[in-house]
Amino acid sequence: MNSHQRIITMCLSAACSVALIFFAYLFFAQKEKSEIRLAGDRQLQIIALDLESVLERYETLPYSISYLPLAAQVLANPADKALVQQLNLTLQDMQQQAKIAAIYLMDAQGMTIAASNWNSAQSYIGKNFSFRPYYQDAMAKSGSSGHFYAVGNTTSIPGYFISQPVYASAAQRGHSAPVGVITVKISLDEFQKSWRSNNEPIALTDRNGVIFLSNRDEWRYRSLRLLDKDVLSDIQATLQYSGKPVTAISSLPKKDQAGFGDYLTRPIGRLGWQLMLFPDESKVVQAGVQAAVISMLLLVLAATVAGVYYQRRRRIEERQAAAIALQRAADELELKIAQRTGDLMLANTQLEEQFYKLQTTEQVLRSTQNEMVQTGKLAMLGQMAAGITHELNQPLTAIRAFADNAATYLQRGKTDEAVANLQHISDASARMGSIIAQLKGFARKSSGQLGAVDVCSAVHASIAMLQSDIERLQVEVQLAMPEKVLVLGDSVRIEQVLINLLRNALDAVETAPVKKIEVLLELNEAHISLQIIDSGAGLPEDVITHLFEPFFTTKPSGKGLGLGLAISSSIVQAMNGSLHAGNHSQGGAQFVIRLPVLPE
Image (cartoon, rainbow, N blue to C red; front, side):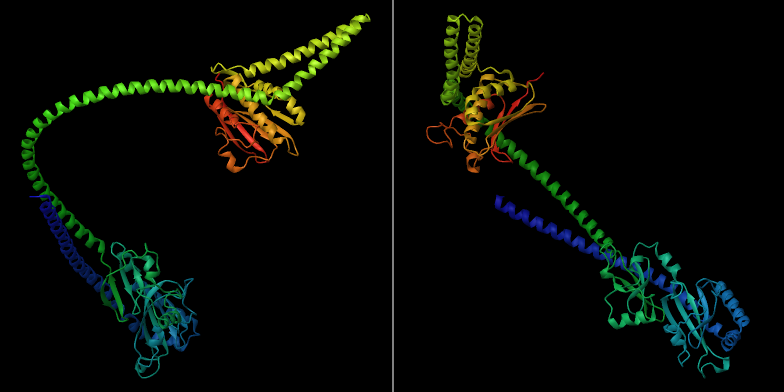
């Protein structure tokens, strides 16, 4: 079987497997759905019979009470308190014996004149219920009973109301208008409590589809669908649900709608009620998924067995082919080893030659770098030549004047004045020696070895080298440094970097209205940060990115080669530090040197 046929076979097998799994899901899901609906219908029938038996049990109670002569007598003499109290006690006894919510008597205007809860804080006595449909139905000329479910307007407790008209005498029943209405209120809360043990939602709705009993509290007084304005107006007029706004279940949050969907229903009572059971559809999906998983596992097992058999046969064929290929590969390997050995020996020779060339190139680069550093120092000495000449010229002039004065004083015999002039000559000579020593120290080549360097001393020495230019340009130099800070570096090269940066700062403030240079030294645990800030015009943004490139300069031709900052950056990096340039927040250029602190 070639690869094309194998692919077609695998695709057909996969399609058949998917179809089988899908058929198993549909079959068992439908079977589970039928069983759930059948069980739900049986359960709904039991609940419906229980509910209807309770409603019918109390159907004749108000009819029987309406024949009480005491009720007609109270309606004829409502001002007789003793008679009313006698009826109150009678109704209270009946209510307690029948275990119902309340019994009360209303006159022809709907005013309650006697009630079983006469001694309760929520007594019906004095309340007018003429707006209730059960009162209106009982007072109709037909003399029929009234039925209504509502939330109590006085007690806020829901109940089922059954009413019967009361006549002046039994003989007048059906021949004259009623003189009052007797009403029985039955609580259905026991059903609601018993439904809570059921995991599936159960609901009892009125003829408008409003749920008034349910084991889902969030569904109560919600409609199955959006109601018309006329229906909502009728509900509000009768205060059936105590004036609460009736909205559809679909307006509830998704979590509160859980379980609402297809339902089973049975009619209940005389008011068009519907008893509903919402089967748990998740069981249907679960049954289908379980069947699909089992089918898939069986198919996987079958495929595994077939795959093992196929692989076993393939392994036998592969072993036979491998034995032949192994001998052929062994022969080819010996030939390739011989060829690769020769190639490796040649490559090794070439690598040795390249390594020797790299070592030679590295030595040349190091030598060139050192020469560039020394060249930069000598170039800087050339730039400082005028200032150095001025510094040396002043002591020389003073020496000549003091020598002439000393000779004159000796001729005149003034020994003390001659000694004083000779002392001035000695001081001027010392000053010249100090300047020359600094020049010799700056001009000498660095040993390249890193050691302890006092950054503060290096700053002072660098400023001393440029003192003549500082005084000539009248530049204010502000120092903010500790007394002594040791870093790991090269003193000669650190001074070269500092002089280069200070020289640039002097050039930057030469034409500035305010001539000031700040040198700030900050110390942390691992590094020092030395900032040199000038009051010049600052650095353009396009210049900062190229500032440390060799031969890049912003100075006019003849005033610089563009090597100073490149060499300075290279020197600082060689001492494991960094040199950065930018503009200060208050104006002017800012150069920052970071060097590692010398460990204790």
